[in-house]
Amino acid sequence: MSSKKLETRLERDSEGEIEVPISAYWGPRTARWLGGRRLDPAFKNRETFHPYLIEGLSTLYKARLKIDREQNLHEPTFSRIKAQVCDEILSGQWRHEFVVTPTSSADGLALLDNLEEVVERRALEIIGNLPALGESSSPGGQGLLEKNLRKVLLKEDSFMVGSKLALLTAAREMSQALLDLERLLRRKSLEFEKALRGRGLESNSELALAREFNAFGNAAGRHLQRLRLVEERLLELSLKAPSRESRASLLDELQHLTGFKVKAGEEAGLGSHTQSSAADLLSASSFIRDLSCEISRLVLGLNTLSDVVSRVPVLATLQLTALAALSLDSAAACAIREPIVGSGERTFAQALAAQAVLEAFCSLSQAIKYFNQDYLLGANLK
Image (cartoon, rainbow, N blue to C red):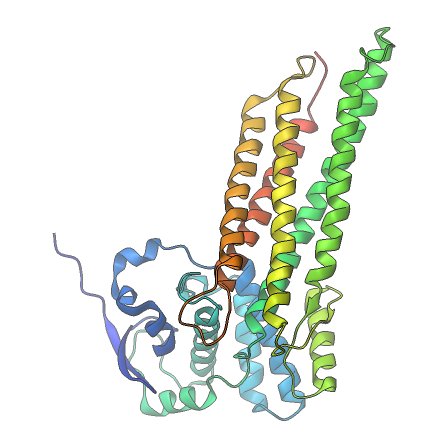
């Protein structure tokens, strides 16, 4: 059975001409990261970057646009239109245009290129210097595209800063899930103790069930405190800027856009910057590992409490999610510790590590949230 041939347009960059799907906003740089896969229909079933990573980089892009515009480093009208495109991306539009994967480049440069090309091309379409999708590129539009590419986002700090913003979003959700878990466990502990005493059960062994729930609540509280330490590390952003004032302005704008109290970390480009980034990701990853182990112990403990009405599928789902998070932690640890061949300096697979840690955070926080709703809220004594 023959498949319909994919329509393409011809794009040119510094390396020459390359075919790109005619309906895509992304262009030649993204196409080169994809190689021959860009024209393979089966490549649609790939693992692309987490939405929070795309949002984190889009937020950083928008903040840099404003600061550069204020310092007359970027043409004002076109800069504002690109900021409008960033808002479109942040609202969930154009997600299908982000086609590179965490294995496309070790340092996340592929995603930076992908984002820049989508923003630039969509902005040119808005101002009328580029034909609508599905039409051939005009020479004038392509010239303006080449002129404006790589002016704002492509700085050595960008991917790690975007990753930290993404992880802060995920950590905020995890924090709420753990807080609810702690409160519900403590509440159930008090409810069960009251109910057991009402049945005339007063001894330590007879009240052990209530105290088990309180112990689980204490464990959730400890992990919540540890998460706040992880968040403190993530709030430190290593930024590259022309001056200290520019750096401060960029941090202020990021605070305004995200609501996070970000602060200046070690300046990007210094020799220890890569090691610092790796340590920050390892801190988040080790938190996930220890929390996943605690969740597994919680599930096994609850499963042995014969006096509680049990919903086994809910417990099994939480345990399986914890096991999956442990595997993602292992993947992140390998990505961080293994140097990548072919790089100009010793580096690590930032893209793979950030993706794995982020997926683990999000999947585990969602599982805890559903556990709170579907198990703890309705848990009763037999």
